[in-house]
Every structure is written in C-alpha cells, then in structure tokens.
Length: 358
Image (cartoon, rainbow, N blue to C red; front, top):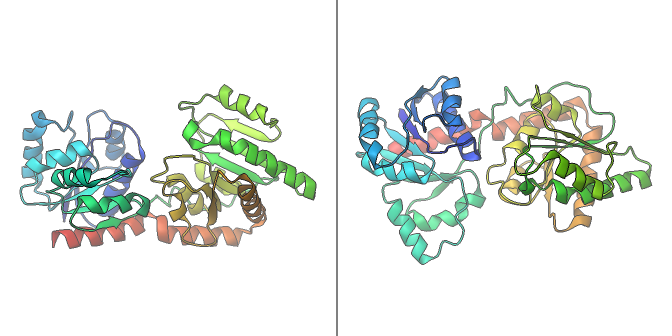
C-alpha cells in the first residue's frame, strides 16, 4: 500500500504530533510513504529526522495544485491522509479516484443544520474520517455519510517506558508541559495547598509539587507570584523552565503525574506518556482526558470546579503512587503499551486503511 500524508500545520501542535505518529504507524505496518508538509515548518524537520520521503510545498493554495498533481502522479498513492482544511480542499484536485481519509483533531461544536450541510459539501470527496477520541468524533457524524473511526495517538514506548530510578523521598506530583494559562497551574495551587494541609494533619509525609515546562503565554515569575499568593514556599514547590535530558526518568521517579488543564486536551499525549513510564496519572475532566482511563490502575479524573472532591481523589492516588512497588509500575507500563503504543496505533490504522481502499 502507498500512503501520501498531506499536512498544513505550521507549528509543533498536537495535530502535527498525530500526523507524525500516524505516518510512523502505517510505515511500520509496511506502507510505502510520502509526506508533504509545509516548507520550513517544524514538522517537516521531524519527518526528515525520522527518515521519511519528504516533498514539501510552500502552501496548499491553488498556485501549488500543479506541484501536488505532479507528486501524486509520480508517487501514485492508494490512499491519501489529510490533517487540516487547506490540504483537504487541495486533495479534491489531486485525488483522481484514490481514497481519502481526513483526520479531525479539533472538536467541531455547534454543528447546526446549515453547518452540517456546508460540512458535507466540503467533505464530499472524503471517504472516511478519523478522530483521536470520542470527544472529537461525536459531533462529526453530521458532516459525513460514513462513520467516524476513533484511533488514539500512539506514543513511542522505546522513548517513554518504565525507568528503574530512585523514587522521590517525599510524595511528588509532577506537572509536565508548557507554562500556559490553559494548563491550569494556578487553579491547582489551592488544591495542592489543601493536600499539604491534609498530610500534615494526618502526620503523613508532606508532598511536593514539581512543575517542569517552558514558558508559553505564562512567565516563570508570574507563576511563582501566583504560588506565593496561596502560601506555597520553595519547600512545597519546584518550577523548572529548562529542557530535561530524560523525561522518562523524571516521570518514573515521581509519585503521581498530573494534568491540571482547564481547557483544550483534545489529544492528551502527556497523560499517555506518564502511563507508559508506569506512573499513575490524575487529570481534570476536560476534553478527551477521561478516555485515557481504560484500566482502573491508570488513575482517575476529577472536576476542577469541585475542589473538595478533587483533593480527596488526588490525595488517595498520591499515596497509592508513592508506595507502589517496581513490579506495580512495570505492570502498568505494559498495560499502557497495549493501548497507547505506536504498535497499537499501527494495528488500528492499517485495518481502517485496508478497509477504505478495498
């Protein structure tokens, strides 16, 4: 099978991450692959680094249709994958009887009758839609005559896997990801303050909060100021704004992974990475996050608007995660591989690809 991936993303977004993983998954299943991203985009360099055959374009506008048609004619794909609107529109002019799968990486809320009609018109040439979660797929039924397949992102478990490192001495919660208001760091500070108070009242080891991420719409100084407002000292909280050499080791040594986001999280990669490292994770209930918990040992999600219930649930998982054995962590990591690995994504995508082209 020959598969051609077209992607118009200009930055390293979750959609770009999905496109790279999907291409790797199909290539692993034996598909001959051509990738056409935007020139000089971050994802172009990442595809090249993974050894893909890459033929980039400046854009997917009408001026580039001749170039795309030439690529299509030379490669002769059986199946085309698109990941955004511009390349899906461009595919009308290069499809030439071939099958087309459109990945939808954003939730399309508010699809009234008029928008459903427009959506169907814009996808008349699309043979199948895939989405990374049920949260995304649910509103899409109105714009396609066929079904919407859900395929979770597959992560590289050779990079994210259990590491036998010394566990943190104090119970440690780790939030990993960019410093951005949508990630909910500030909203978690009062919850963490209550966790510290509970531990002290019980005579339990006092937990620490570790935040690791590069600034993006939120500065380090602003985050520290917010923490101080809730009385969190440097003994309670560590904030690191530099790249970490071994993310897997960092995830393996903490007691509990936390995703405190108050929005977004359509594709929840970091939660999957914690689990692939064997570490339990607890998240808010936004976006696709609740769908991560397909195994009761993985953790749980909470409602950030219900702080008392959130504190109780987080404290329980924090104590559990801190006392776990090496075997328990390894068992969780293996369970996560069966759900969140590139190999699992490969199995799911090749079935859909073969069914589409047959």
